[in-house]
Length: 176
Image 1 (cartoon, rainbow, N blue to C red):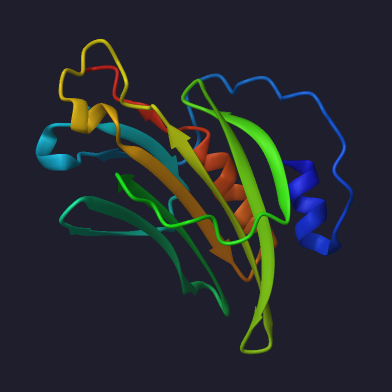
Image 2 (image 1 turned 90 degrees about the vertical axis):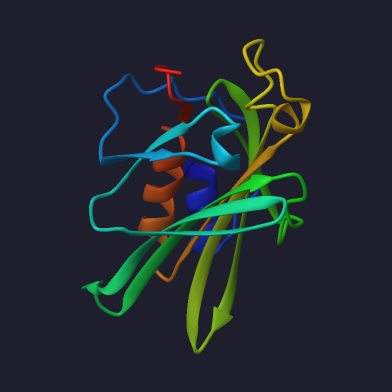
């Protein structure tokens, strides 16, 4: 994610580069098990840094798992990671920078952007993981068609990079 970091820090031209090798288990951070869609979808696992609070929102047709580093951990910075699971994710905020990656063996494209809010720079990265639940063991077509939308933002660029790294640990729970 070096290009994304350089872009977020001040911009750069996109140049092709090789993918970094996948990280071997165990993943750093605290492991979270995400059960969604009334347990119709296989549970997901993700490892997120310890200092993050968790939350969950759901409505008809989607669920969002939230991880937030409260400002009290490193004032005045905060950072958040959202994991949307549903059929209609919102559009990517800004496609100013696109960088390839892999999550759970699926090819993804990370998009990065920055903006000003209350006099501070907000760093943002997001991607879609398509077909994560399209497994032979998943018979429910509605579940097979779910999209996972990962989005991270912070006023601390290093935290966005840490959350991108955490997203690389997203995987289907192998116990299922």
